[in-house]
View 1 (cartoon, rainbow, N blue to C red):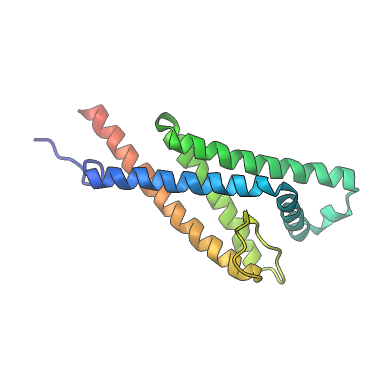
View 2 (tube, one colour; view 1 turned 45 degrees about the vertical axis):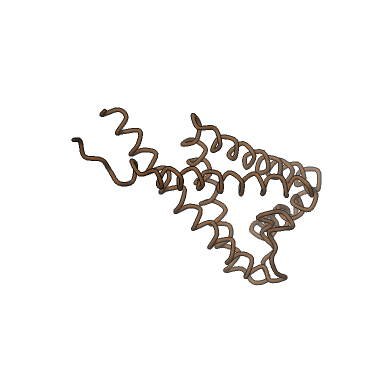
Length: 171
C-alpha cells in the first residue's frame, strides 16, 4: 500500500479546499462588485492614496493625473473579478490563487504603509463596506489581519492542490 500524504487524501481536506476557494473567490468578487457600484468613490480613494504616497503627482495637470487613477481603478476592479472566476473554475484554480496571492501581498503592503502615515486616507478595500470605522488605522489593521489569513489559506490550498497533483502523477 503506497504512502499517502494526510494533506491530500482526506475527504475533509478536500472540503476545506473547496470551501476556502469559494471564500477567497467570494471575497474578491464582493470587493470588485462593491468597488464598481460606487466607482467614483473608489477612484477618489485611489486618487487620495496616490496623492498621499506620491505628493508630487498632485502637481501634475488634472488631464494627466486623472487617466492614470482611472486606469488603476478599472484594473483593480477587473482583476478582482477575473481572479474570482479563475479560482472558481477548477482548471484555472491554481493560477487564480497565485494571482490572488500577488494582489493580497500587494494590498497588504499598501495597508502596512498606511499604518505608518500620519492621518492616512481610507483604504477602500471593499468599497464603502470596507470601512468599518472612522479610523483609517483601525481599518488598515483589520485589512492586514484579513489579508494575512487569506494569504495563509491560499498558500495552504496551493500546497494541498500541489500534493494531490503529484500523487496523481505518481499513481
